[in-house]
Length: 488
Image 1 (cartoon, rainbow, N blue to C red):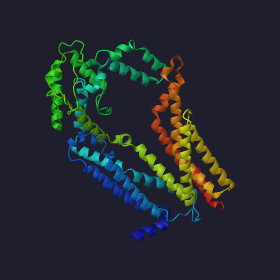
Image 2: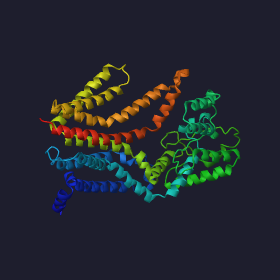
Image 3: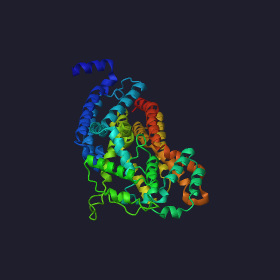
Image 4: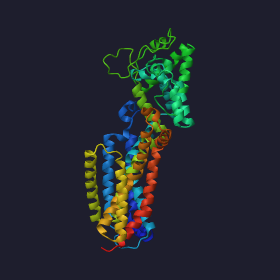
């Protein structure tokens, strides 16, 4: 059967056969299924999710090591077959479109080969969905967020200062949404009458304004929770506070966690307290030696549980929390090295690798002995331009075929960093141009630029990936074909 499939592919789809696409995808599908099952079987009960080690299960040492070994084993086996037949090096007539399709297929295979941790996470998310209910998650998370307004924790003491007041936070958010302008930011800061007072004022329950689980899609905002808590406090609805804390205590008990807090003590804190001043903070970790019978609320374990439930029930968060950009970046690094080896010869590839090591050592020495030098990033932009110029010059002038391939490889690999580097340079220059420490020398234009670059940092990587595909398709591949046609 395998022979018949290979025979059909050679005749009708030579590129698919040459790249071993069918067998590569089949093997990777089996490995991904294995990682999915591993992730699904890693959890036995919801109680395990309270352990911080289960918060990012796919990033544990065992999962990372096994996924790396699996990726390495697959890539080596695949490349042994893939590199057996190279039509370009065998002077077989292939057009540029054939090589572009080959590069894109290599990118797809590399992406599948490096994303085993994401599949593991998908498996664990499916198990969490099977163990939990989204409506329960919303109920538990809303109660957890609201509890912070009535149970002041030691590590949150600064959040009860006037500087964190909801009114001030809302005003700041509204101003930022309106224009992102430097002038609005200055006006907002000037509205603070007494900076010393808001930084060192009374720690009041009314000042707290924060969500521990910040899920804007499904949960109440911190402003809605603050409005509920403030209404109960100002109207002296102590029965409502008591009922809520009792229900919250039952939630924690149902999950199976230790939660030792005297509800009467919490409620009595609002009696005869006209300024709603926080007079006592509670421990949140059970192993403190000073913890007594009514002095411990287990918020951290519940936070771990709810964060993991949030990631599972909001599947789209895998794009951010799962580090998808990191895996795509790793994909293009691997694909560029593979395609550069495919397009040139082993000798020039090895020389280029040794050149990278030498260049790295020399550049590191330059930075070490020239610490006062600024704008180091421009040196790498110069390298990119230099490699591109030398590769084009040497290939088209037929000066030296080996050196031409070496510089072509260096130029190909430098595609990895050039767009993110340029973007970070623009971000760095904009940030340096609007420092608040410069008083009247502040630069409104630089501030607006900084806000723009900061907001679209992830977009720079997407642009980089598109740039790499376009450069390989319309610059690197034509240069490689021209290099192959040059005499030795």
